[in-house]
Length: 393
Image (cartoon, rainbow, N blue to C red; front, side, top):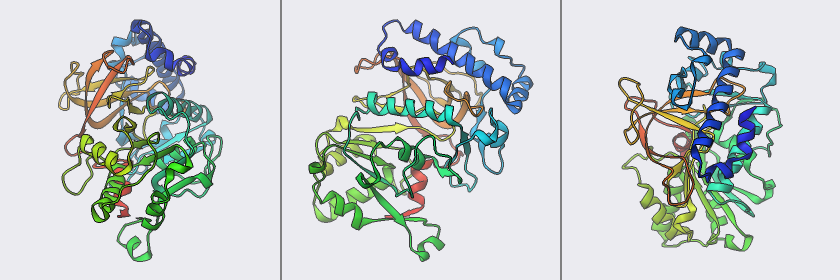
C-alpha cells in the first residue's frame, strides 16, 4: 500500500521543499486506507453510509474533514465495540493494548503483524529522526518491569498497557541493560487501588551508580512519576546525578495530572537539566494515544511535529466543524497507518491548535501542533497520567 512507501520516505519528505507533492502523496495514502476500512469493516461501512459518505467523496487533501470520525468511546472495552471495528480476522490479532483512563472502561485496540510492522517503523523513525536516539547503551523507564522481552511478531495472550508494550518492543536492548523504576505494590496498597509503587532503592541505586560510565542512555516514562521522584530526591538531599550529556530524556505525557498545579514544560526541562545534567535540547516530550498510530514528538526546539504521512483536523468544541489554523479545538487525528482496525479518523478529547506549518527553525516541514489540555468533562487521564494514579511515590 502507499503508506508503506511513505514510511520509507519519512526523512526525505520531512525536508522536501515541494510540500504540495508530499501532501498529494499523503492524500493518496489516506484515501487508500479509507477504502480499505470501508471495504473490510462492516461496522465502519455502515457508519459511513449513515453519514452519506463514500470514499469516492474524497477528491483532494482538502476533503479529509469529510471522513467520518470515530471517537475514543467507540473503542471502550465494555461500552464500545472494539472487536467489531476490526478490519482483519480476530485470529490475526497479535496484541490487544489498553489505554489507561481512570473510568474503569479502557480503550482496547487490536493490531495484527502488518499493523505492528508499520507502527514500529513509525516509532523508530520518531526516536531516530526527532529524538536523535540513534544509539543507546542502557535504558531507564519509569514503568513496571515487563515479564519478558517482546517483539512485534510475538502473540500476546492478555491485553497489555499500551505504553508499556510499545516501550518494551521498541527497546532494542537485552533485558539486562534495561532498568525500571516501578515494582508491584504491597498488599495493603493494592487494596487501596495502588497497583505499583516507586522502587526507590532500585531507581536511586542506579542513578547513583554513575550511569555515564555505561554509555548513552534512554530515559523515558510519564511526567508526574519522573518529576515527583527525581525532584523530590533532589530537594531532600541536594544531590544530582550524572547520566551523561548524550543521554536522551523522552517524557510520555501526564502533564495535566498533578494533584496540584501542573508543572510547565519549561520548568520541567530546567529541573531535569539541573538534576540529571542533560541538555534541555535532549529533554523531549512525546504526545500519543492508544487509539491511533500517530506519535507527535518534539524536535530540538520543543515543537511537536506531525509526521510526513499524518494529518489533523482541528474541530470546534461546540459545532465540531473544522477551525482555521491557529484556532484551538478538538484533535481529529488522520492516521493512514491503521490497517487492522478502523482508525483512519479518530476524534480525541484533547484540545490542540496548529501553530505553524513549514516554518519550524529545525528545518522540518509540515504542521506543528500545541497541546493545550483535555476538553472539559472529558475522561481525565491517559497512559502516562494513570500510571501515576496506580503508583505510590
